[in-house]
Length: 283
Image 1: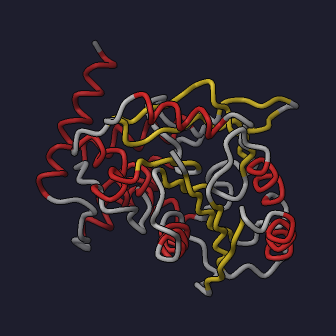
Image 2: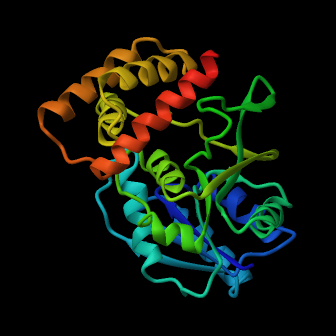
């Protein structure tokens, strides 16, 4: 199986060198790595150009002039989607990756083996580790059956059936829930430890934190599931007051009657699935 990687990048001069180097030493190389330089004003493009010159058959790049303002979800996925329109469609696996990661050398070889082992597997990923107190520790923000948005590998057929990626915060939950809606399996592999150089949400402002609550609304969670999910996420981040930001975001989206990212049928499936998972943990 061959795979292609799309990396949205905005002012990643400090970290992207590590990411691109880790891709050059993979035991199974990608067909292509496309970096979408999204309005960077630092030396990001210089680093990209260095790798294109050294590995012209492996790396390519395009530029996108979007707004400099960062809101989680929409900016990065708009860049990804911009790149996706330009790539060769002859691939088996499409990967969305961030520009601040270091992949272990066997990462994609292992990902491919998972896909080859079962043709009902739609998504595969490892786990994110952050540097803290001189050691690399698990960035424990999500359940272990969830693949982090920083690195997502999709079987082509699955990716197309779920309708690609939604340019909104919550996209990396929508994709997995839609996978399950269409009876695809989501596989996480604890042996695959990806170094995440910038902790998630490090640059989020209060407006962005409201977006988390809006994301819960857009998934069709409803207020009660949103409250539970908000409390859980706030406590995992060690910032209990985020709970109120998330609920305020939900209420604002609800008052504005913003459209959901899923259909009514999918929203009902998602609520049922969430309740089922919560009951399993309780009992």
